[in-house]
Image (tube, rainbow, N blue to C red):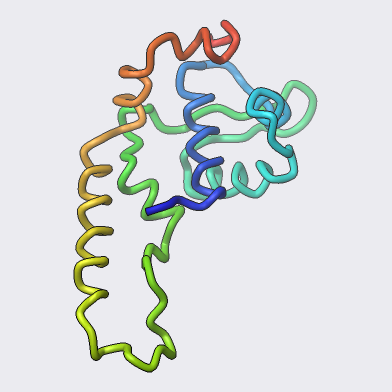
Length: 140
């Protein structure tokens, strides 16, 4: 099972913001992870749209978590950012409906999501040693 880069970046943004109370810019996050700022912009827009973060424009602007990390469920988050979690594409396949492979694959995806449903962003932050140090002692 593999998450898309879009979901990966969204999770990275949340992890970067979780230990902070102040505002952070897209540029700071892109610089830290050494990824394109342009790649992060759409991800951040969707995080705002889905009410995970809030964003402030203009001079002195930035973003921060809107929800408390303990209120961000990883299973719910992944389902929102990965709406099509099919492991195989049976549309138009000549043997679709004639073999049993989709059933165990669908069960595997369900099990994957069930495990993620047991964790919040706060659980990840709490079990990640020295997160504020990793992010350059800038956690507030």
